[in-house]
Image (cartoon, rainbow, N blue to C red):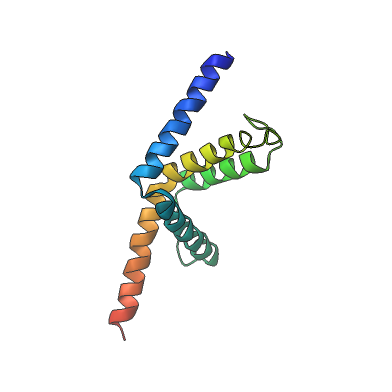
Length: 118
C-alpha cells in the first residue's frame, strides 16, 4: 500500500514540476499568485463574480490541507515535510489556472474600457 501511495505522490510531484516548467517556472508562478490575489480581492469586493463553485471548493480544500495537522509527509521531516505542501499548491494552481486566465481577461477588458472612456 505504501509503495502504491508513494508512486502516486511521485507522479503528482513530477506533473507539478513539468507544469511549472511549461508555464514559465517561478516567474509564471509569481505572476499567477499576483493575479490570484487580485482576483480574490475583486471577488471579495463584489466587483468580480466569475469564480466558479468548483474553484471555491478546490481553494477551500487546499486551505484545509495547509492548516490541517495531518500531512502525507509530516512537516517535522525537514526538507521532505514541505514536499507534499508544494505538490498540493502546484496541483491546486494547475486546477484553477483557467479561473485565473478568465479573471485576467475580465480585468484587461475593464482596464481597457476605463482607458477608452477617458
